[in-house]
Length: 118
Image (cartoon, rainbow, N blue to C red; front, side, top):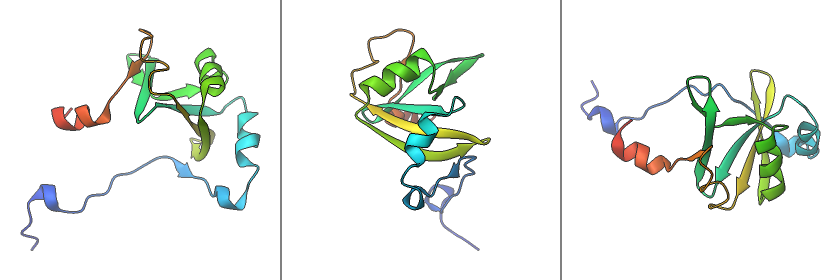
């Protein structure tokens, strides 16, 4: 029997993202940038940028949307992550302050969520 507290035991979670093997396909990022179904995870520095979606918020934005285009132009770096429900997913890093002042978006410090516990 494991006598460690639940907080100190190893834990695993399910991630629906099918990860890419980019090291075997150097043209993958260029190819998925052309795909109209590509989604983007936008990071402002270390923090994800959330956008309104249905009743809540999401960190996934269509690459071809106005936000996706603006982020791609302002982007410091992009990486192809893999597929989510057979749609390509690209991560885009922008300067930490790029979208912070825009009320339409919510820049979330993930450490504050961990501290709050919600």
